[in-house]
Image (cartoon, rainbow, N blue to C red; front, side, top):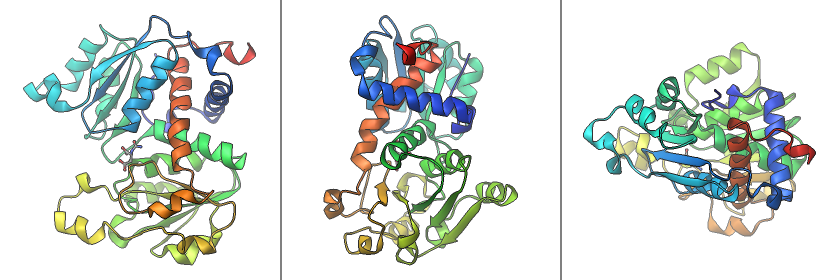
Length: 309
Ligand code: NCD
């Protein structure tokens, strides 16, 4: 049985197939509206979510399936001390596939060892968020027509931001992609990720000033400072407004540089930027549904022959 815990669980060919399937779903939604009739998706969310949980639910409903689940650890037996291993064994009796978000890194991996249904990691602590990454890839592909030959700036909380970690891992597999990592000293990428980039000779640089590099970027991926992962509130308050993207700052950007953000946004993108044609973060939200529809089909083995129909 197949799970999705990291974006690297799919080969480049599999990612490419999934993105093609998502694009076909985007263009021909009615073709897919009954493929999951009779199937159930469980959403097991031990951490807050708006987009990820609702887009998983919308994805399953669009495919003709049904959903069940819980939205917080408080409303599940986790509050009574039940382990993830026991919970997933129980959920395996109720659903055909599940999406799990958990504050602890590796919790969906543990669940996958005990599960009888495919487990999708919907965000584990500061570690990975593969379905957001596939959403980002689809958005970049739709906007730029390619995933290779580009410079991506990732800006904000690169230490705790799981979407950043997954996106770097996914994008580094495409030819001639370089990364500009823009953050305050305290929020630089984790050492393990830096070591991987160094040992594999990837093209990246770490800077602290967004203005200096704006003109080099093809994609600017803004992120929120991850308040909930700080040990110290004062440190969060000091760092939370490190970067605020506004129209003035965008004057030096390329005309075809797109701005992505996994959302939620706090202060890091001024609302005035929403009207700039390069602002792509609400397009990402829509793409997230198509990608999750494609992923559900693939993990349930229901994608066979769909592209040929
Ligand atoms: C992100 C997450 O949960 O990691 N949100 C999302 O799923 N789109 C980003 C964030 O919370 O900052």
